[in-house]
Length: 282
Ligand SMILES: [Zn+2]
Image (tube, rainbow, N blue to C red):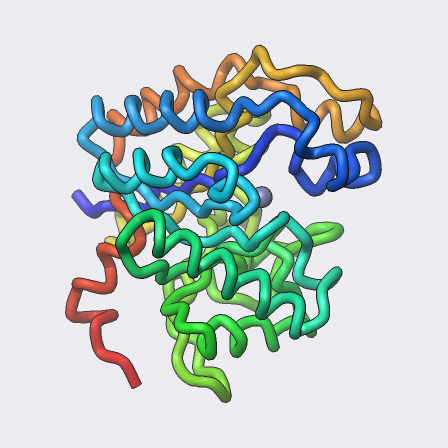
């Protein structure tokens, strides 16, 4: 049985892009933190299932919770970068983006004692026209990206992107791309890689998606956020749509994760770089 990728975007419940208009960055430091407890629960869950994962950590979170990063790595998982303060790529100039991914990588390497190889953009925000971000990642020493969600969605998605792990040939070099898993139906890629799609839709959606990759012998990339296993998080006064997406199914996530982890094998993305197929570098 092939090992798929279990990934977690490590951020607080109040840092999600959908809450941007309601929770200012200035107020973040005053809000009650819940990320450490939820990540601890995920680490325990993975240990019970003998699974490993990649944790894309915000620099902002790592700076305030250094022990969180140490605990992730001590448990055998990979610490990778989710940028500094959850700004979408399109909200930053190339210089600001470079500073954000550089600062986050440096801090994570200091805390983990391991190279930080990977990046996932907040809200999968490396969209068409923002490919310069991929070159900056290469120039800053990143080896892979996991931001190009090959779906057509309002606000995010990289509709022309490949579904399976692949190499991106860029002016700055060769970057591995590990796209979140999608379900292909009637010639269309549907988002089914995790997150809200895992909580809100029937379990069978994500299950059949990963099973399809499994049959083809291709690793699927599953993703989740710590706040998605935390039904006790404070409810924020946000729009009904943001509320629907954020709070629906929180109580279902953990039991579904137990099932997913018992049905499939999972490992960290960094493991691929030890494999011959991805070990050669241009
Ligand atoms: Zn995020």
